[in-house]
Each structure stands twice: as structure tokens, then as C-alpha cells.
Image (cartoon, rainbow, N blue to C red; front, side, top):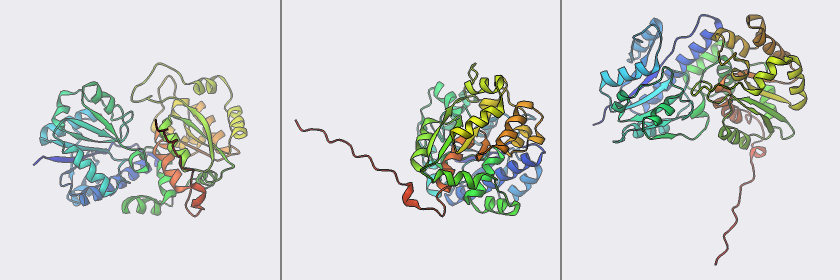
Length: 379
């Protein structure tokens, strides 16, 4: 019988309230995922690294909390060590911010994939991995795995391991990476008992979420998408909402496969006026969903999470970087509703929004006409 284990990697967060919120939400999401894994009869569930309090909670639930083994977290080293020491035949890997919306049926399919006899990987996103099922896990011992999980698919493919992707939906793509993701999850009402309890206790809400969701179900509205939007995700999103969409795709692969190119909008913001940008955006659209990282990074370098998260929460007074502060202030004061976040906002966040926007609204308006293919002429 093949030995399959689930490994949930919980990276530590900083000390600011926004960072602590993301950390607490990741822990809750991980606990909800554990419940689904157990329901799917996954007996060996490991979580690493874990701070002392989270480790105690895990042990109280009968789970194994693994030490990180190093001062600086390295995704690849942790995975290789677990596979080697546990002699695993198959592995289900999850970052602690993802997987909490998966169903038991979906998890059982991941387990079945990890039980295959030949080496292969099934990733939620080949170009920016958050979770994966890997069969013949010992093959990972011959691969120099990356320090972060994002480029895992690219690395495995380069080493000849067949890679496959899951369909893009909220369950496979949603990842808690920023405070905006937590607020959207609270707005949606989705998730298991642990994350629902967290958002209810903290009474979380986003000032523009209601206004933005109303636009998504309105055929007369324009909503702009800016950032690392996958064309496939955009297509799925556009088919699920009633509004018209426009915008700019830039910066894809900035973490998984960085390129020595500066996004066009990044140049425009640096050389121009942020206030003018938002004035023009407000004339062009009724609302905007913006992945700020590609446009506000300096030569590909991002400020600390505390700065990014304060910007996501529309708190310019907590942002020291002049460009980030100006962008945040103008987004907060814009005439249209604006959501700021990272890559997760314009991937799983979009798909979650496309479901949430129909709560309490006329679902018939959501439907798009079905395509009827031309019949081939008989010869």
C-alpha cells in the first residue's frame, strides 16, 4: 500500500495587525482543510513550520507539527526533508492560505492522483503554484526545489516530470495572501467552521466590496482589471458576471519567472501623476480591481508585507513609501469603488467575487447565451 501524506506549510507572518490578521486567517483555513482531509481518509497530515501556540493547538487535535529546521524558511528544503524522512510514495502539498474551499470529493481526487505509479504533478496553477498532488514523490529528491512554491510547476517540468493543472475555479485558485483576501472571504460567507468563526469574531468588512459586487451584476457597468490576470481567469470571470470588463494584464510571472522588463503602467505611474491616473480611471470605469504589486514594485523589489498590507486596507497614513502612499490615498478617495491586493486578488479573488456578486440578486441575469456549433456539411 502506497504511503501518501498531506503537508501544509504555514509560513510565519509579521507583527502588525494586518499581518497578524492574515496569519490568523491562514491558520483557520489550514484547520478547515485538515477537516476535509480527514473526511477524505487522509491519515498522515503534517504542518510545518508552526509557532509555539499554533503547534500546541495542532498537537491537541492529534496532528503532527514539524519544526522548520532553519531560521529562514525554504519551501524546497522542507518538502525534500519530509519526503526523505517519511519515505513517502505520494504527497499532497498545500500552502496554509489555500485549499480551504475544496470539497471532500476534490481532495479524494488529489489523493488518487498522488497514488499513481509514475512520477507526475497536479498543480492548482502551473505558473504560480499554491498546492499540488505529486505521485512517486521520491523523484523530488533528485530535483533542486525552489525556495518558494510559486515556480514549482516550472521546475518540475524542466526536470521531465509530467505536470497537469486543475480547472480554474474559486476552490482551486483562492489563496489567503493579503488582508483583502480575508475581507473578500468574509464578504462571501464561504469557508469552513474555523474561518467563519474568525471573520465573525472580528466583524470584518471591506468599504467597497458591496459597491463593487453590485457593479458585477449590472450589465450597464464597466469594471477594470489591472495586474497579473490570467487570460483564462479573465475569460471565466467575464462569463460569470453581467458587467463589461476592460483593463491591463501586466507583470505575470514576476515571482515564478521574473523578467528584466518594467511594466508599462509602472513606468507611467513613476513618470506621471497618480492623481491623474485615478481621475482617468474613474472616467473610464465604474469600478476597479487592482493587483498593485507589478505597478508599484521598484525594479521588481517589493516593500515589506506591513507596507503592502496597509495599502491593501486603504490606510495611506501607515505607508512610508511615497509612491505606495500616494497610490493608496488616491484609491481610497477615488470616485469609484477600488479593491487593492496582490496576485491572489486577480486570480482566486476574481472567481470568488464572480460567485458572491449574485447573492440576493437575479440569477437569470447571470446567464450568457450558449454557443451552438455549425454542423458540418455531409459530403
